[in-house]
Image 1 (cartoon, rainbow, N blue to C red):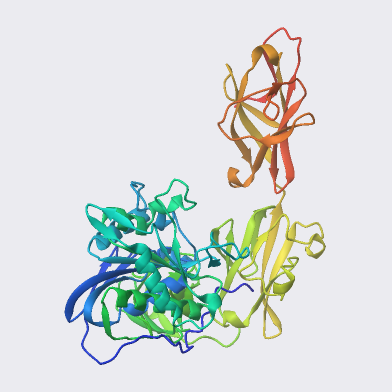
Image 2: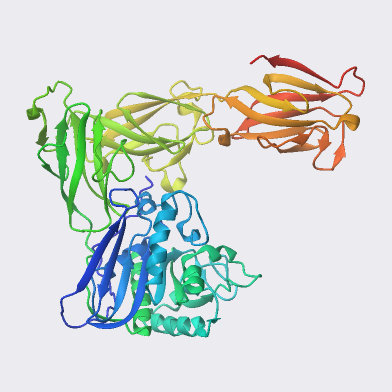
Amino acid sequence: MKNPMRISFGVVLFLALFFSGIAEAKRTHMVFFEGTDYELNVYRVYGKEDGKTILLIGGIQGDEPGGFLSADIYADMSLSKGNLIVVPRANFHSIVLNQRQVNEDMNRKFAEDSKPNYETKVVAILKDLIAESDCLLNLHDGSGFYSEVWVDDDRNPKKFGQSVIADCERREKDGLVIELGDIGRRVVDKINRDIENNEYHFHFNNHNTFSEHTIHKAQRKSATYYALTKCGIPAFGVESSKSLPLEMKIRHHIHAINAFMDEFGVVPELPSVNLEEPDLKYLVITVNDTQPIVVRCDQILTIRPNDVVSITHIEANFERGLSADILGFGSVNDFRKPLAIDRSTRITVRKDFYPCGSVYLALDENGGKDAGCITVSDKKGKGGSFLLYRVKVNGKELIMENYSTIRMIKGDIFELEDVISDAFDPSRLQVNFKGYVGPESENTGEDRGCRINTAKDLWPNYSLDRKGLKYQVVTHGENAIIGKLFVELDTPVLNYMLIKTEGQPITCFENGGSILFGDLKKLGRTLTLVDVISNVEKISNLEIRISSQASGAFPLKINTPIVVGHDMLNNQFFSSPHRIEVLRDELLIGSVSINYTREMDRDEQIEKPVNH
């Protein structure tokens, strides 16, 4: 099973936090976009003495936990001098999904941008916070290990990991001089004093973003470039290496933040660090907006079909970074969202992207209107009332009942996310797709988390029909089969193409049809493929090309006119037959031929059209 990154939160870290004394912290907490998937929490920590303000941004790209987990620690800090503004989870939606971005890369949204998505809204808030600050630290986990010279594929000038990044060596504007290189190198020296292994030492990384010759032009849309050019403050990206264990990434980020605080005279007083394993205690849930009900971790809340459920409180050993996902309903974070439940499911609670507990929702199909039908019970030992399969087909999440059948087209991408049961702990079950054999290192019989290409990754000999069209997913628990999900595959089929030729209306051509053109040396007619209709859900999942024996094959784009008979490879006209081919996963599913003649009475003839 490909599990998400498992974090040993109980590991004791040498955090190198040089704090002493105890004092009451002065803090404020603001919430923007509350109740949305992209809720933004901003923490301000004020020192007893006034001083410089450092802005910490973590999680602007959601698959970089070293950054957002280290930033989270500083939200609870007390300061004797200076101030911190802490945004631990700038992109909470992508953090919950454990992916870099949702709509767009949030760290490429700081240039002029008016696209109406949630990333634009969050960046507008971050820009205001940058304007309040004296220094910006954008915390990341980067690829490989940065080196000024090429050492190998994992350690070279194109890598980001273990570096402090600036956009230039020195910035001078309106009489203000910012010596980014000097600051960065002093900070790097301080960081490396706390890192014993020289292989993991940090380096100053000048991206030369202003230069026409830079390889980092995309950084001109980043938060650090905005802070430097628009607000005139020093700004740095801090990158721990993605190749390091999570605990080490957090530790190195803490060394870097501490070094910058020392550089800018921000003096800490008291840390409050919680690195134990996340643990859900209970949820407070209302049903049909009635009296709130407390449901402990692993308990079952039995409701009636189409009751409206709302999670109003999450009690865990952490306060921040919590989300609740009612699987198969709502979105990735259903906290405080009223949702009508029409089938049994599970509520998964996460700390960031790390699951920390579940509550089960079961339906009482015989329940009446009496509120007494709503009950809370402990998890059953065996023979539970339901077993469900949480799957994805081409990225779309589905909840399938036990012993049901899911139909797909060969080439669809199938993912077994998890099973849901009120009787068994899912982590103690084995879920096996019979006929799928993963990489040797992962071939354990547990197939949750695997991305399965149904055209390439399945063995027909292990299918139920021995033809590669019907398979089964088998769930084992305590040496017995407790459930199955059946998978039926249809062959991808081209129905027809919509084609427009110059001077003619859009015409339908069935699979196997043909277009006959006249003397192309004289005509040079254009052809436009308007659409392709098949049983494959999205046209983006198809490969479309023009091919011939004479010129090979080249891609054909939708709504892009081409000169028929013009050899795009050799830039010459020709009269050999061509055809428009549609493929899925290298399998030809249909075509329309293009034929030419030099002797015709009319400019163009079309054969086998389908009237539409």
